[in-house]
Length: 281
Image (cartoon, rainbow, N blue to C red; front, side, top):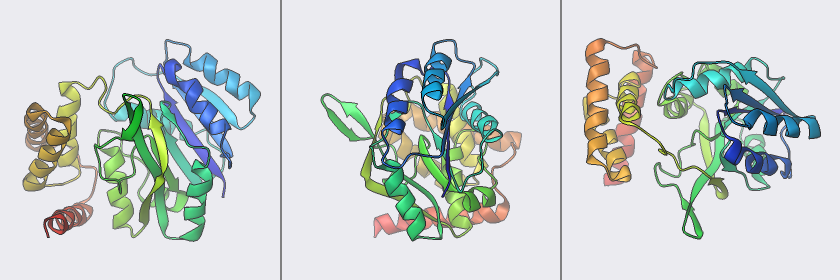
């Protein structure tokens, strides 16, 4: 299986070297790793270029974009820019520049894809540093495939029509994969170090966008409130709940376009409610 990895990178000089070192150290290296420098003002491009000079399977390209931070959309647009330059692949990965992979990451993930022809998405789990320990980044269930370390089978990626350009893209893709009858799997023993915890630098604008994403995924108001409460509890911020609620209602009254069709939305609601009831039993 040909593996192509795309790493969107904006001002990632502090983390990129450790990230790329972990790719170089893999027991099974990807066929291609493409760093897409998105308008960086630090030495991101220079660091990536040195690795590209030393390893013919590492590439670096530059994308000129707006300096404005657009939650979710900016990283997806950068990924899609890289995808236009990708080589032929069977597995396509969207990875962040602030992670360190265990050496057997791609060997283990590849084994899962080869063993299960229905597997559409697979990843390890993210861990963050607390004191001297690395602990699970507990903002999602361990069954959820996180945005910084996603690997898709091409058949699944094509069926879900790629990534949605906005907040929630790394949730709706999992739900759509399941809608199209693909399996999704995380590998608990693959501990990936996340050097910059999720939510670092988040603003109220991000939280409003999270609420809007629930609307775009057709959660419905009851499910959206439950999801917002869960995120607020994990973040230990009641303000997050109210900001997400405002974001959902604002998108609702403005009639914003959805991420999914009515049929897909019906599946998503049924799937989410089934998960909630199973936890209450």
